[in-house]
Image (cartoon, rainbow, N blue to C red; front, side, top):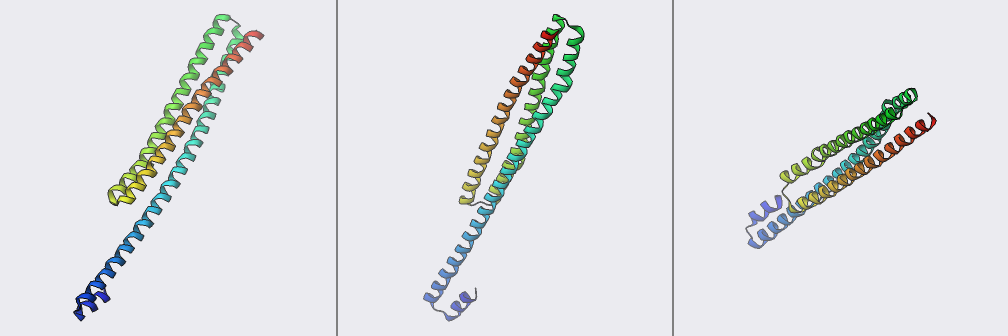
Length: 191
């Protein structure tokens, strides 16, 4: 600014134009540096948030799987085995087997629905909302492209996690059904 004022006082058009060009170039460089810093900060923050979200979702999946297994074993399989040992009836055995299968399926479906709701909420609150806010606030083409790419990657990661949740749920259903069938068959054979 001082250089620009001095050039204006000298009254030389060439000096004024040269100084103005230097000032504009300096401002352009500063703006680009600020944009680069903002882009880097946004990318780092989004990547950290995505990693934290993935870790939290994986931990929630593991906890839900453990809880479902414990609940099924304690609440369903153990009482069913006890009742089968007392009744020792084929009709009761069949009914209890059906009840156990239905309860296992219901528990797993509820767990999957809860996990999917958690994943959707995390995507909307943690990934989409900040990205939209950044896009609306900072109207810079480069920044918009970078944020959109990062959001797409984050959404893809969360979708992959959701697919993993579904696969884990299906595997859990199969394993629990096999356990129930084996336990019921063993109890029936013993009785």
